[in-house]
Image 1 (tube, rainbow, N blue to C red):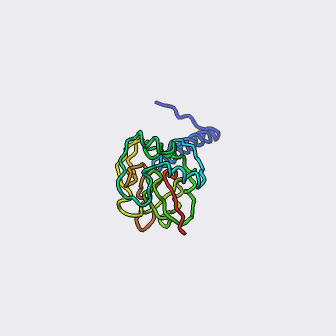
Image 2: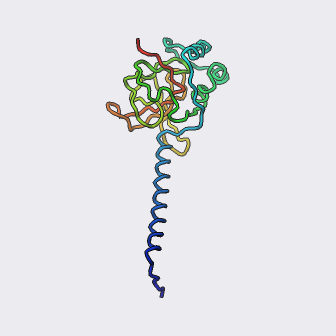
Image 3: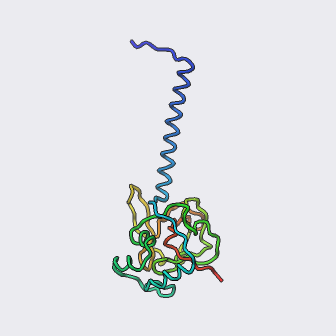
Length: 199
């Protein structure tokens, strides 16, 4: 028969402290996993460019057009030549920029967001909202064909990847936790966005 050993107040306090510590660790792990599921990311350096530098980049890209809607289908080697390194990393290698580093994440300017790789219109600024996830978020694309969707089961998660409807550049992911009227949250890498302010 086991003998019960009475616990003093110090033992009870230590036991309670140990249980609380494990509970806090559990909550931290759950919070971290939820954050990663919403928008996973790899470490990509943030870069701020002037409008002049951005225009120069677009001129060196022969497929970039805001008026041509024909599909772009070129070899990966060509994409690597015409896209800046950070854009290529996101668009073609499906990378992700660090959260809260995009100049578009908190931007309130009125205008249109385009694909940085090909110039395809993607989102209007009036569909942009502050999701708090660290990346520019929108609830609806410009039109149905401007975005294409693909299942993404990478990193042990089940998500829906969104790509440019013209050049198939990786943009980010779409989640079903956005505001009305669509209930969707397009979580988009700012590096792959080009913006034109409305006159």
